[in-house]
Image (cartoon, rainbow, N blue to C red; front, side, top):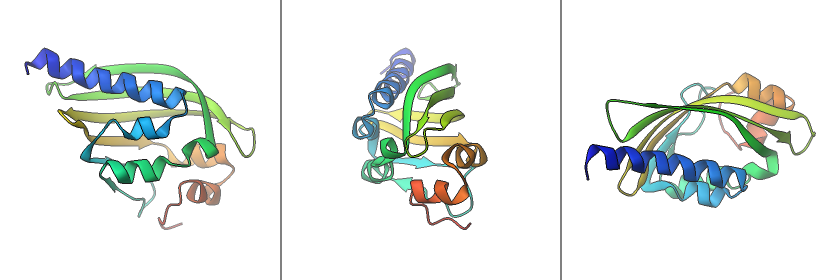
Length: 151
């Protein structure tokens, strides 16, 4: 596969992620991972899980739509890198916190590497304070994502 095809493959995976998110289909979102792909959260609180494998990603996201109703991707900027398999994605979503009806307007930066079998690494840089504020507090953040991180 040439570099252009590899770059296209990475962008197509991002397209499918966006479609799945807006369709509230987190199983389809998780389907984009390679069987042994990872998802990590470098800006999350200490102890936040690092996910290893498609099944772990699927389990982590299983109740996401019970917590957040994402209604739109309000901004998306893709930055190609020297590695055609890797894209830096700046994006923002807008929605509603299901439990409270409060707005959920959050910015993300993701560094995504895609291989032949799907996403190999997804480093999700999000602001835990902004998410906690949207959800109603730090305890709600940990409860929503069943995180065992230190409070």
